[in-house]
Length: 158
Image 1 (cartoon, rainbow, N blue to C red):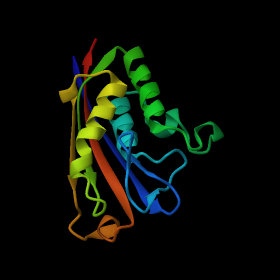
Image 2: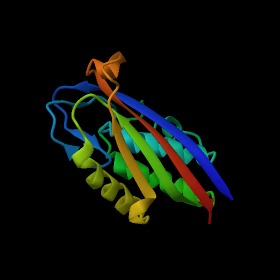
Image 3: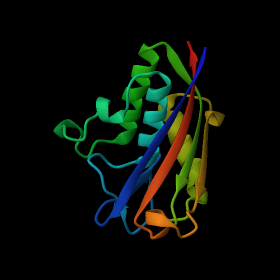
C-alpha cells in the first residue's frame, strides 16, 4: 500500500539565531523564530510523513507549549516522527520539498540539505528532492519576513 501526505511550515526571520534548514546551518544574517530550532524544512517533512501515516501532526507530537521542545534539534524530532511512522507499519519511499524564500539563495545548499535528511532518515540518496523558489516579491516571503516550506511524503507499507 502507498500513502501520501502533505506538510507545510513557515517561520518568521529573527535576529540572533542561526538559520537551520534541513539540518544544515545556512550563512545568513537572520535565523528563524520558533519554539524549537525552527527548521521549517524538517517541520514540513514531519507533517507530511505523519499525515501520510494518519498519525496527527507536529503540534500534537511536539507541542510548542511544552518546555521539553524548547530549542529542540528538529532533526531529532524528524527521527522521532519517523519512528512513529515505522511503528504504524510504513517507511518513507520519497519526499519532495519546496522551500520558498527571497533570501538567502539556497541553490548551492540543497545538496547538503538532501544529504542531511537522507542520512537522518536512513534512505537512499535519491529519496529526497529539494527545490528552492522565490515568491517574486509578493507577500510576507517577498518582503523578506520569513520562509515557507511545502513537503509531500510518499510512504510504503513495510
